[in-house]
Length: 511
Figure 1 (cartoon, rainbow, N blue to C red):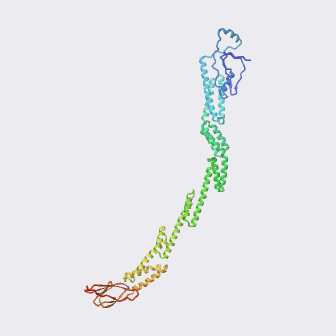
Figure 2: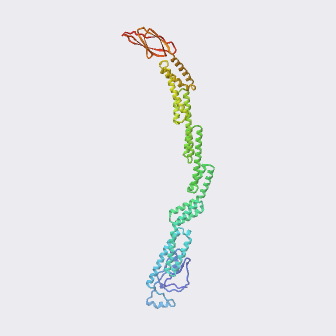
């Protein structure tokens, strides 16, 4: 049974590796400073969070020189220590301080390494940097071995190399996170939902304390889990589109949008559905417009084509329909004006007919029928006025101008005789009246032989008792004068048909 160490025995570190404490064969120990045994120190080192693979520095205090017993105890100590090894010599103060500084430097580097390694593990490094972590562990174990062997500078170098590797690995984390996010999104976009789930799960592990990145990863996981249902809804929507069942297609698309509106195919299929609906609406509007055109419902056709004009892709067809509406509406209006003008002409409403022809020319100044109609109605109205004037003046005014006007009126009426039977009767009556107006008649003038008689604008007859005078039908004035008497004016008319009566011209009133 091994002897229990005494307070004078020095504490020696027990070698520690990733596997734990490496036992040594028991040997006799000299007494030194009081403290736990080496196996206990190894267990404590592991329990203090070395991470399961290296020692948090030399846990024992710096060895000190053994204390000497008082003189009165010396003989007993020598007897008790007979056969034991002599105590080790104490290190020099400077060497002890340097060794302590190296030990503290190694321990500080080790603590930083452990902290960085913990952060890497918290960000899922065992999943995405397994080999790098293994290399760091091996480097740290090398430092452990050097530390246990008392080679503190070599241990510090190994720890620093491991720390540099951990820092370099940590520096790559943002780029790795971004690449992983891109990879996950690419897989999801390609509908590789199993691979996407794995990629987002890794991204969530890499997120660590990055809340935004973690939420993105969890959202991606949910989208990947829902992707099969989204694809199934899109497939049914596409079948409904093929069958032109817009309602069912819209229902399945709404289902896909509620699951994941950003999934590939949702926007494209929605655009296709909208486009097909617009196409169907465009065809319906164009059909309605052309049907209205056939019915000559120009207002309805115009409304339908304007509705088609608002639909995507309907501009050209709708503009063509509107042009047809304008053309046919104009043609219909012109035809109506022509019919109205001809009806007014037949009814003798020449002013109304002229107004219809002028309205037609306002719409299209090149219309031959309207140009000819306007000229004809202008002439016809002039003829109507001339006929009225001739009928009024023939038999009233016997002047040459009146007869000439009547002859010109008859010539003006000639083009209208064929189309207007009633006009022919009127013209014939005028011709008869003109013939009568041109034929002079004998008028007998009577007086007292003392009155001087003259027919104004015709002839001075002098004093007479009776005289025959040939005059054209019309209104005349005979003037009688006699010295000492008031002049007398006698108005008489030579009728067109009847025999004119005798005209007496006598001054009877003395002055």
